[in-house]
Structures are given as structure tokens and as C-alpha cells.
Length: 227
Ligand SMILES: Nc1ncnc2c1ncn2[C@@H]1O[C@H](COP(=O)(O)OP(=O)(O)OP(=O)(O)O)[C@@H](O)[C@H]1O
Image 1 (cartoon, rainbow, N blue to C red):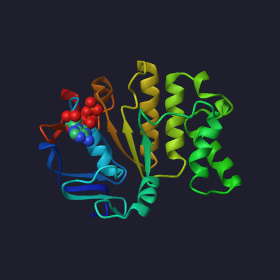
Image 2 (tube, protein in one colour):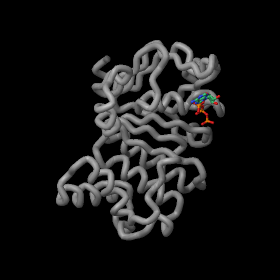
Image 3 (spheres, protein in one colour):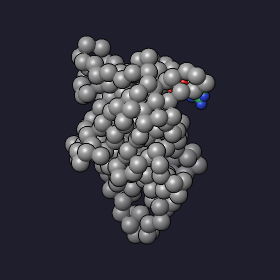
Image 4 (tube, protein in one colour):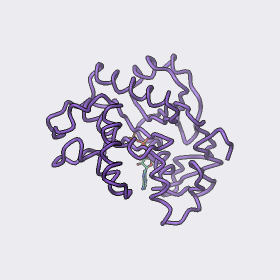
């Protein structure tokens, strides 16, 4: 893999029941790069992400993520791969019966960190997303935008190099969406690569970065200002 990329697909194809969803795709996400992935419902965006966190294996081609050859890693290595990824997905919500602090601490406990480090790191990432003062709150007492910021804090806890964000501004009002985008930009400026799947073209136009469109199994770059 190139020294400068953190994700690399080479001639990747995925076919479900004779329907080719990803057709011989090659793609690189640079170290510290911000990119959008767009495409209509059913275009294959989720399949694309699933390849990265090894929830799906391509029929042909290779996928490399950080230092992992994802297409050939053992089951044992999958958790180590996933630790390199900050995952912000709609279906990966906060635990409703735990405080904000505990929700973030949870991801550090499962990776076997010491209590003193966990405390320091939780406060650090909550500070980064501007929610230290809400650490004792329950998720249901936060706004949608605040909940999403806690999800982002949790995804940052283990210091991943790459963030995968699936519709992080979905269901949020324009003000909350803007605060999420500013936060993702801040994280990106600190050196983390961000790959964001979105249907929110207003946001893409307002925060223009490389935009890749999936259509008929192929990936092409489009001008974010022309969406
Ligand atoms: N496990 C599967 N078996 C069969 N078909 C599948 C499977 N997973 C996805 N598909 C089909 O492959 C196509 C691409 O699905 P995918 O979920 O990757 O699209 P998407 O772009 O993420 O869509 P959305 O924007 O609606 O989430 C869809 O037609 C879907 O029905």
C-alpha cells in the first residue's frame, strides 16, 4: 500500500445473487484526507463501508486498511482492524441506560485500558466534542446533535486513524448538522482521515471535499459544487 493512503481498494467486485453491486472498483483514501461517498439508495454505499470494517469480503480484488490486508486477515485480527476505525453509524447508537461518561468509557474498557487512563481519555474526548459538562447526563436528556457528538467522542476514544461516518448529519436540523460538520473538520485537521457517506447535498456543497459517487457499480469523482 502507498505510504500516503490509509484505505486502498484494488479491482474490488461484490456480487449478490448475480447482481453486481460494486464492479471492479479501485479507490484510495489518503492519510488525513476527507472524502464523501454519495449515491442513490441501493447504490452500494453500505457494502463499500462493510468491506472496510471486514463485515463483507469482496468476490474479487483486494482491500487494505491501515496496515491490514483485510481480504486475507484472520478472524482473530478483525477486532484489531476495527480499533483503527472510528465508526459513526446510525445503527450504532448509545446505550440508553448508561451516562454519557459510561458510554464513552465502555469502548475503552473493552480494549483493556487502566482505570486512570480511561478517566483521562474520556474527559479528553468529551472536551474535544464540547460536552464535558454533560458527562453525567443520560442519552435521552440530550438533543439529537449532542447525542451524535457523544457517538463521535466514543468513536475517537481509541485514537483511530480513520473515521467512517454513515449519514452523521441525517435527521439533524441545519444548526446541529453544521456543528457536526465543524467537529468532523476539526478531527480531520488533527490528522484523521474521514470517509463520510451522505445524502445531504446541502452539507456537501457547504463543506466541499473530494466527492465520490457510486452508480451502476462504478465509482467516479464528481464536483461537490455541482450537486
Ligand atoms: N446480503 C445481501 N444479499 C443480497 N442483496 C444485498 C445484500 N446486501 C445488500 N444487497 C443489495 O445490494 C444493493 C446495494 O446495497 P447497499 O446496502 O450496499 O446500498 P446503499 O447504497 O448503502 O443503500 P442505502 O442508501 O439505502 O443504505 C441493494 O440493492 C441491496 O438490496
